Image 1 (cartoon, helix red, strand yellow):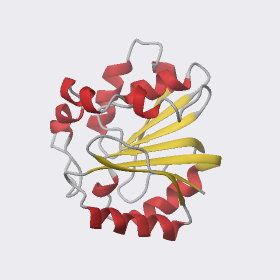
Image 2 (cartoon, one colour):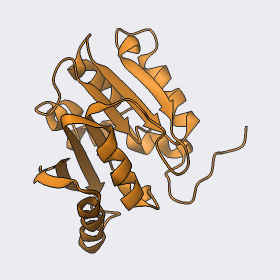
Image 3 (tube, helix red, strand yellow):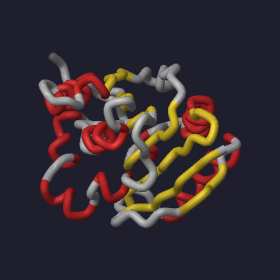
Image 4 (cartoon, rainbow, N blue to C red):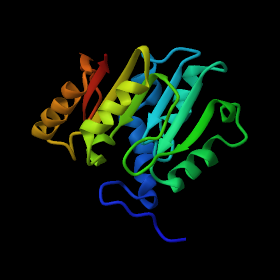
Length: 185
């Protein structure tokens, strides 16, 4: 099978850099997401990669909740499947293969996580417009971008796309090595 290629995204072959012991020292999923996710919620893990946050999100939403693990690469979704197969989380996680120019998700969500992936999206304005439409009333979007890839200027430009979509900044959570925003309508 040929390697899936896209000029902006981290290839699945490097997914180990997204899910390892060192990262757990800086980005504890339960600590970062715990105060935002409640039992019974529907959550989209956008650009889920190998599922680093997916498992924790599935734990937080509980038996009545649902996590849509969405990625542009089938190989990443296969890694998510490997992680949850045979566990009690399997029934809570739906894997969704995104399209090149949009998510293609139609399910409304209470919370959308976009962790270290917005900088990989060529048309951020369009993406934020689509995400706004996916939010349930009172829903939130958490955008977290890596300082090592996203300069302060690039982050400000991203905020312009957020503003033009009609989303509002509610909070600026502190996440190690990152620039972070919590958004709502």
